[in-house]
Amino acid sequence: MSSENLAGRTIAGYRLLERVGEGGTAEVYRAEHAERGPCAFKVLRQRLRGDPTAVKRFLREAGYGSRVRHPGVVRTYDYGEADGLYYLALEWADGKSLADYVHRAGRLAPAQVGRLVRQLADALGAAHQAGIIHRDLKPENIIYEPTTGQVKLLDFGIARDAELPAEERLTRTGFFVGTLKYVAPEALSGELVDGRADIFSLATITYWLLAGVHPFTGRTPRELFQQLLSGSPVPLNHAVRGVVFPAALETAVMRGLARDPAKRQPTVAAFAADVEAGIAAGPGAKGGGLLEALKRALGWQR
Image 1 (cartoon, one colour):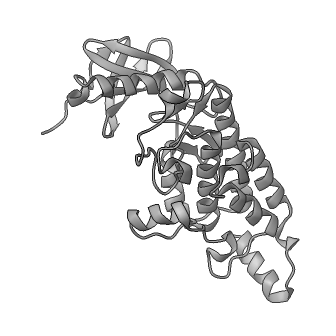
Image 2 (cartoon, rainbow, N blue to C red):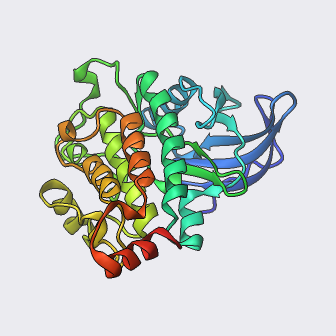
């Protein structure tokens, strides 16, 4: 059954120009507003409009996103119900997902990774300051503009309000939200999570940007689930044959991947600072002779 196409309609003052994407819960349109200019316009899918839980979650995403004001977060302009439709109007961000960029470009130079990590940490820090835990940080939820090097964080669909009472924040036992490759271990059993869960996700992204692979090697969801719960990530300097990063950079990333949240950096800003310090240490931060120097050079220069 084909989904409806709302292109050409004007809803709540937004003229929908073309459908540009769709997911399990919403469709996304490129839209135009008389005052705000180009916008992204999300509409709850037709089959979910009669589901009170789906409507609540959709509007919750809108409400959470609207609380975060930062240049590195896609701005929420407006949300609500109009003409029987539940909608969310967002800033139009130029660029593609970070996932798309890396799939084309391959693993990134450490200096570039450091700049991206700092921007993401600043954006996440603003969300945490607003009492919002993202919980679904992944390259697909990050818009990257290569010409400017700027990133923007989006999609607060499964974010959590850190200020809600504990009994309202707990998830069902054995149920987790997020994307398995990037989700923090403590979230797998539905535990109450805090901003350190976002640190784990950011550390996983950092590892992937540097090495081009993920820190856990499970080939199936079951294997990956078990590794996250009880295994250890592959050390960064063992991830890619012949590639060696400075010890301080490896230490920073692996600390962010600690299974115990208490052993991670205390904040996303602290994680970014550790990564930047590791990068600043340079390829000469680790000894080992000519062969090791050559390996480090290969790891440092793409």
